[in-house]
Amino acid sequence: MSNPKYKRVLLKLSGEALIGTKDYGIDDSLISELAIQIADLHKEKVQIIIVIGGGNFFRGSDLEKLGIQRVTADHMGMLATVINSLALQSSLEKINSECRVMSSIAIDAVCEKYIKRRAERHLEKNRIIVLAAGTGNPFFTTDSAASLRAIELGAEIMLKGTKVDGIYDKDPIKYKDAKLFKTIPFKEVISKDLRVMDMTAVVMCQENKMPLKVFNILKKGNLKKSILDDKIGTKIV
Image 1 (cartoon, rainbow, N blue to C red):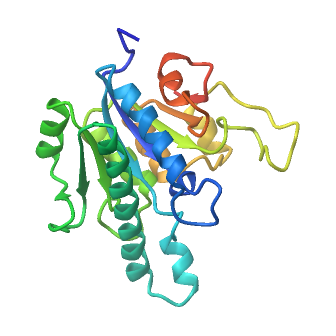
Image 2 (image 1 turned 180 degrees about the vertical axis):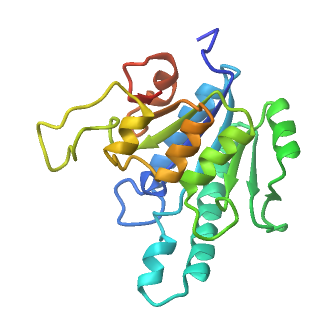
């Protein structure tokens, strides 16, 4: 991979992807494997921006059902993404990959505040950046935050790492005859309401001509393959 197709990518990881064999929280072996995949891609001179969800701990919308005010619940969800981001940073630093965590909400004793120019500077210095706390605003998902940062920081493609191989015409867990799409237009994802990610995020990518690929990141080596090989995952164009 001496000439990677993309020079700057944004990787969106769902919090659930970090659970592994556990019921909740972070699977140590899984996050270590993810760090190796990310570091392997980074060695190929690809600038990497990462946004992680917090669903392995809890979601703001779920906490609201328990009677917690939605704004408070969403802020709690943002803090869960900070925990995940720090865990990934630690795993990357263990294998000598320089990484910075930047948060949309100020937590000065823990990580940097996200500032676009500072983030760009880290990328120019060949550092991996992990962006935590979503957009910093309630009512917005980390999918929307990932789309926003991908556009804002000039990523060439947004990669959505999930537990499934890509986008299907129906739930592959429930239906054995579910068909996997190799490519699919944004319009079809929206019109068929294919819940691959938050629709606000999908529309943002569509309006800003940001290519989007959904792939299974839990398969070893799939992160690099997703960039090299269009047979891996589903590309939304």
